[in-house]
Amino acid sequence: MSSPCRNPERCAAATRLLPFALVTVLAVAANNASAQQDNAPDAQHGPNEVFVTGLFPNGGARPPQDPIGTRFEGNKLAIAAGKELFDQMNCTGCHFNGGGGMGPALMSGHWRYGGRIDQIYASIAQGRPNGMPSWQDSLQPQQMWELAGYVKSLSAPASSSVSQTAVPGTSVKP
Image 1: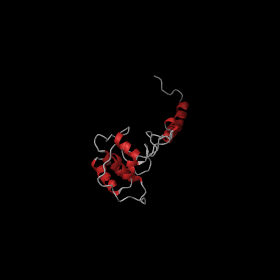
Image 2: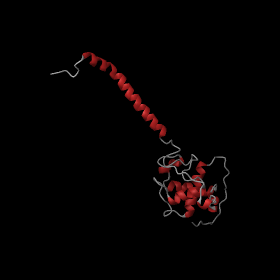
Image 3: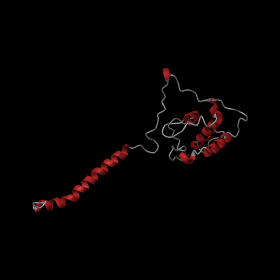
Image 4: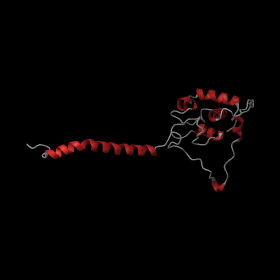
């Protein structure tokens, strides 16, 4: 029978170099891991971010904001109704009271699909990929506008002026 290490001097040298080899392998692995982390998206700019372009068909301009939304943006009564709906529809389950969780944060001011109230309404009505369901079959348009108003208010600065008047008896048509 022969020994696995025929030359005792080589075996001793290999034994002395083994810790250095292990440190080198671990350092290379750590460097590769940190390089991959540098390429990973940060919390505010996830891989599902959609760039809202300034290009429109035939070189046209950005469409104007839906005038219906202006009645709900900053309207305290609509925002209160939207908050109630936010709780009832369990939006907190994904958005964690606006701070983000499974769903994106609503307080950060960073909007994947646009932060205008009509764009928020469209996200609520149509849903979005990777988890946001469409609510247009479950909620009335006015309710979705109220939700949009509430969601928009989550990212608004505290000093913003908020309308205290509501338009009583108004209905919203899609």
